[in-house]
Image (cartoon, rainbow, N blue to C red; front, side, top):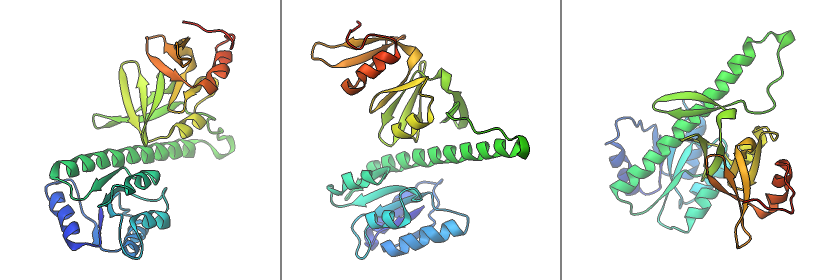
Length: 267
């Protein structure tokens, strides 16, 4: 973990709170954005990348948002922004900060933010494990006969109770957006992964899944009917009774996918 703040008292406040967390190792403490960029790069080159940064937004020279810009959002460690100005919150989430702390913050708010960051770090580790497993499976194939990679996801790696397991996509009922995460709904269970709806839509078989709303993707064969509300809004009802919003702009195409008359309705 890296603590970045140009105010010595603010840095010490974070360090004091981290002292009560036995599983947290502070890799460095810096007071400028430039030093933060250098520290992140140096740790990556050394093979021990920083996994979490508490990053002040307002700093002379290079701001916290500038640090993200120089490192790159994709290469940036899990980030919690620390700011005295709540108008920076929206910008923080635009660059995929997992949370932000508004100064002055109390102990409970800090622990809440740290717990959220821990979950995000674990999800990134799951993604890395999934990548290593895919590489291992690819390496085992004979070079001359190596099969092409599947066009679409066949399993989704999820973490729970200290273990990573692979959920077959045919078991998924629907997926829903939850900020920077996605909820994977399987029967009466819900798993959380770090994926966007756009990424999932591109990696799921369009013959099996359909994005019924900007925040929801359903498995088509789980849908029982399309519903029309009195106000003109639409929804889909799954076989288990779950109702999910259906965008007006996607309604006709989805009706055709179900073999229904786009001009008709069902209850």
